Structures are given as structure tokens and as C-alpha cells.
Length: 217
Image 1: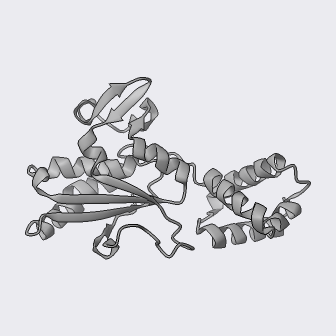
Image 2: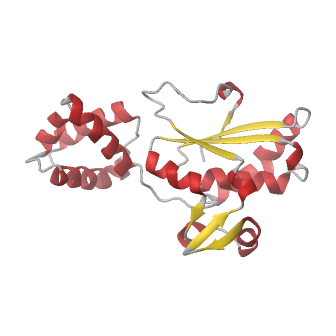
């Protein structure tokens, strides 16, 4: 793929979807675009670029290319440094700040299949002994609807537990067929919404978003 055309495709897809295509993402981007060209039986990258100008067909393709590009690797407590900061600094400060009202709203942007949003819910349960007396909601948002469907189910395979101790696994999950099911109390703490932060202007069913504390997990 010619460099000039590659830059054009990255620009138009980034502008339309809000995705940040980094330098280290280019190989995956080229591979994904090439796969879409083959699937659509187009003759070239140039034809694929112009394909986005077709109103009816391009709408479907925007959804497909977004889904392909946002299917990434995630797992519970993925970033140890980040979750250590959350556990020992950020969340305790938020809990202290909100203990008068006993209400807490946390927004996990780019939540993918939900592991990181649920990890925050688990941390809150560990940090707040009287959590049942609190009004807590974690809002997970992502542009990939397929990922959100998986997140809402709260069902995960062993690959999602690479950074999870057996104690946490036993306390918050139960064995299910070919995987693990999250504790119902944890699932109910998190709600998921499909949001395109670039084009939707946050058209979300929660009217209290201004009360949410953003944590990009």
C-alpha cells in the first residue's frame, strides 16, 4: 500500500471513528484493511478508499472496520501499575471524598469486553466494607458493540485471568462451562453503553454523566 494512500485511509477512518491509529498500530491497520478489501472483493486500496463515499454501503463498512480495529487484547487487572495506583491512592481518595453522600460514579472509557471496568468494581468491593450501603455505578463505554455484548454477559475464559490471583478468582467468580462467570453483585455495579465519542456527542441514556469521574482503564 502506498504511503500517501495509507495516510489518507488512516486520516479518514480516524476522523470518522475517533480511533487513534498510532505508528505501532500500522501493521495491524494495513492487515485489517487488506482483509476488508478481499472480503468486499475490491480491486485495490484506492477503490476501498472511494468505497466510503457510497452512502448506504459505507455505513455498514464503517461499523465493520471499527469492529475489526477495536478488537484488542484485555484482561482483568491488566496494568499492574495503574491498578496499584487506583487501589492505594485514587480510589481511597474518591471514597473519602464521597463518603458523606455514599455515592460514586466512575466512567471507564474504551472498556472493550469489560474486564477493566469489572476490575474497578472488584477493587471498590475490597476497599469499602459497607459497600451495600453505597450507591455506586461504573459506566463502561466503547464503540465496539460486539465487545459490549460480551461485557454485559460477564462470562470469561481463562485467558482473561492472566494477572488474577487464585484468591480473587475464587471470591468473585464461579466456574461455568468452559469459563468463569462473574459474581452477580459485581455485574450489577457496571453498566455498558455504545458510545462514539467523536460523532455521537455522548448520546447516552445516563443523564448524570457530569457526575462521573473518568478513568480510562
